[in-house]
Length: 209
Image (cartoon, rainbow, N blue to C red; front, side, top):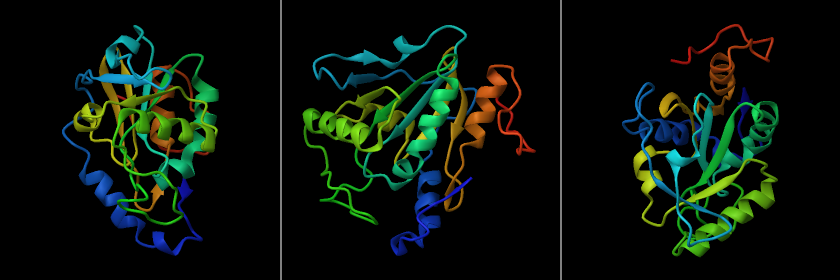
C-alpha cells in the first residue's frame, strides 16, 4: 500500500480528493456487463476502436483510466508497469486517456504538470503521448473520444481501474483514504488466473466475483 505525496503540502487534504473519486464511482457494479464504447488509438485520430473488440474469450482484461495531470496516476505508474510485466502474458491491459484531472489552465494542484484542458482530439492524443513518455508507461494506451463517452459510462475520473472477463465486470477498483492500493487488482487477477497471490505478506483477499 503506497502513501501519497508525503512531501507535498498541497496534498494534506488528499482524503477529500479520494472521497470525491469514490463519490464519482457511477452506477457500475461488479457482476454487470461492461459497457461498450468507442476509443481512439494514439497513432491515428481517424480510427475508432470499440472496447468490446479488444476482449478475448476467457482472458482477463484490465482497463485503467487516467491522465498525466492526475497525481494518483503519476505516483502509481511504476507499480502499474510492474503489474503489467508480471501478468501481461495471461492478461490484456489498456490505459484510457480521459480528460485531465488537473489541467494547468483549469485546476492546477500540487506539482504542476503543464497540460491544458483538451479542446481537440489531437490535443488529447498529444497529452496521452506526453503521459506515456514522461511516466515510461509500458501499458498500451487509447484515448477517450472528445464527447467523453468512456468517461460518462465508466465514471473513472480522476483515476480508476476495472477488471473485465468475458464482458463482465469482475472488479471496480477505487482509491482508499489518502492512499492507492493495488492489492485488490492483484488478488482479482490471481483469482481469475486460479493461482496463489504473488504477495506473500497479504493475509486477506478481496473475492473476485
